[in-house]
Length: 501
Figure (cartoon, rainbow, N blue to C red):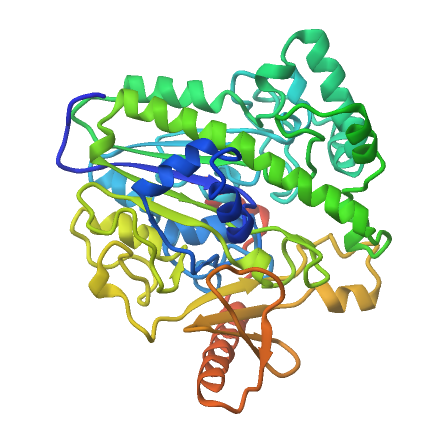
């Protein structure tokens, strides 16, 4: 391990995209399943009652970087899925404090064109091709074409590459044909000799690029490194890094994973298909375990791990029809809203402990900033998660879903739109969750730290459910007011501003 370089801690922030709390913790508890994360768990403070602020990638990451809820940062479908230049980001703050800032993302939405890379001095991100064509063993970050709509899959290409409608069609069709995609990777990987090395990782260039970036930084300058890993996002490989028999692969090949058809109501997964998809998701966690190990080991070899603030979390979870919702977006159900959050801090007395208090992505920037003496960041209700004095029984956290992005409603009938295209906010406090939407009466539920199954519905006339319902109602009213008072910023002009022009 390298010698200590600065009193200011280095910061390593890893997002495991789409990872939900209960399945993650269940696998971490098994040393044979996720051996590295199992061993790491004793070194961190864990927050099993953590709720994401949003049901999908862009608003969740925007909250993680700004410490604001979606109705305040505005990066969501109702106002435009781009983080504008107004909210301060934790990367901008750390850069002003003298940090070198590096950004390494495997998610094509988490990149400069959506405004999420503000404050990072060096940014590398992957495109849709790298997610699907893994057998090509892409070892260097692609530079996506920034000309498309921010919610259109962006193919990795060289700068200035000409648009290709055929390529874009192939990229949007591949998720609907997971067996073809998997077989193509399996065959291509065997032929090129990259199957065992890279096929299970999305953007395998992240680890060596991160290592090279760390090697270029001055020893006396603190660093902030952000990494997004996306293996837990649908569709899933047949094996996820583990050997697979012919019989199991054939069973996988008969199973659908088509999110587009499910959104349109054209595909209802059978119990066997749901089990197959869920099993593929769990297998993907094993690839993430190996990748987190590689990242941590490379970071510790270049920097002082004992003087590193390490945060491991997710942007949202993933549902497998527990409440008749597949994958994520559209609702604030427990499998989507509840995410893991681990923090390892230099000299922290809470290392190895489990917190019973609610936590949120909006708390992460404030927790990081507090290590440098800053007492507030983002939302006024956020807290320093490593300061026991900041916990309060009255603390509430929130998760918002924003409906369908512009254009996705094509091919969706009115009944299906009513089910999916809606604004909702969940409020969590104590053992109660309340959900309020634009229409209908709010509802309340009993929830647990484990976030397993469908929560128990409560009557709203008792004191605690009624109080949390009022919090949810106030949050949805605030969200609606913020949306109605601001102009849509998904236009070309606002997108250019989001890029920094």
